[in-house]
Length: 163
Image (cartoon, one colour):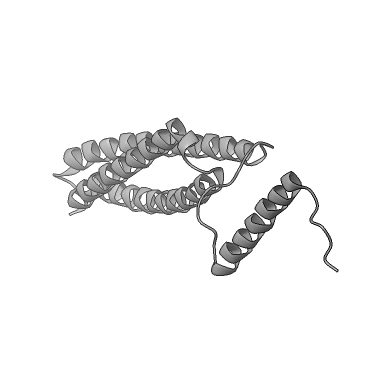
């Protein structure tokens, strides 16, 4: 019975490894094309990736605990001992591999976060994207109107005073 549990853990670890690899590919893509995105948006995405990474970390810890328990049970069973022992070794190898991938994911996230924080501090940075609400849109239009009208008035000179 426990060798079936170990096989399930192997499947879960492979799925988790695939999810980690997909997330790392996404992060590398964003790092390669970051000039096309606003740093604020990428920082928001880093936060979402970090939350996803924490969930993966919790899933890995749960799988590790269950796999160790199943490995101990498989080691005690008589005829299936060799089979369970081999699966246990495979699970241990996968746990190490997934843990290293998780550390690499954390390194990639930290690098993307540091790059975006540096971009946020850049004095030449101009935000892009739509304003958050209607008031900001109205205020931006009014500000642009006064800016343009000031430039027009500046070119023509002061208006004569009306009596």
